[in-house]
Image 1 (spheres, each protein chain N blue to C red):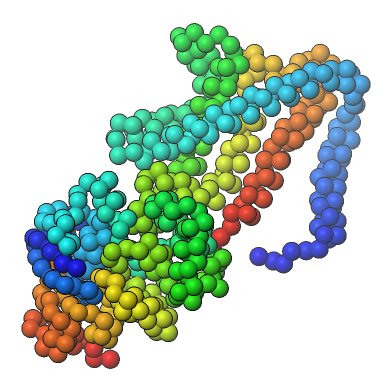
Image 2 (image 1 turned 60 degrees about the horizontal axis):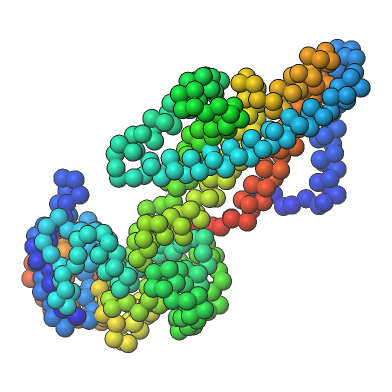
Length: 243
Length: 251
């Protein structure tokens, strides 16, 4: 995947969350965004997910610019799998129905096919025993894995994760990260916002450090984690890697 | 929640509660030395039945139309187009802030006359629906707003259209919040239909009132009236409770 960001700016009220961000990365497969909270990582990811529009600037993926009107954005979002920190499964539907809903209503698969594809996806991630449980009956890790299965089932061209493990305990975090790594190994392109530095280090091919609305550094993980150039990045990594 | 008591225990408790209430009433009536005259009222039973049927039909139609009005108003409150939002807001505040009696008179003497609606039953249903619709819209709006922003994010992220989002994500979750107060509103609507008697609609309450004045037997006329309304409101209440149980899920 080729990702181009040109002069992206986004403000919420008086607060400038993204401040003139530009970036161009070629043959990208796993892109990880790190940085302090409130630094603009999630907002950038939401823009890439087609959930927000930048105030100015443009995004292009594989040469195609992201649209700005809601209808075209919706078309764009159909091809993207987005996973949120809070899982965001539909609580009134069981795991199977959660996965079937987009397949059936957005991608127009006939019901039996949607069902078969959803079951197949659950099976693949050893989630089959939970097919008929509602989110309220699942653990945090299971919920997040079902949410990832829902995002994967539509065969998206790109997977986006917004702090997918921040609400999970270490064991569940490992479960979820394992699943993400498996997806990476099978060749899916993914962009991930995370605080799991060890994971970023092994899984990413490029890491960007965002703080105060700017990308202060963008480099392969070995480089950014061993020889960070900017002071904020050095301080951030020093703090976060100390324990 | 405490564990479910056994069937026998529940039946006995219910009987006890009913016996207590009946006891209070019997005591009250015997203390004032009321002399019952049921045969006089029995002669007019046809009037009760006809009035009750009119009330059933009027309330039934109003229930459906007021729900439609309520849904439309609640959706209007969420449109990006500001004048429509204000319109819905003003409608709801005005209707909820004024007595049904006044609305009924204005509708009957002014609006109906101006628009050439001659059938008083139509005016009655219309007023009742307009009135109840305002309350229902607030119930529905609260239900819709109870569905969190993260759910809307998720719906957008998977590519649902706005209509699909309401259909598959918002309404199924909102309904759980909506049902209990909606049932209360339906019960109110049925009881409020008794006010239609003031524009001369021969519904249940007016007929009972007439029987009372023919026979001079107030309680014998009004007790069946109360029972007749209970017969309509109680099933609604029970039905909603069962719906609530079926729609229960953890968030």
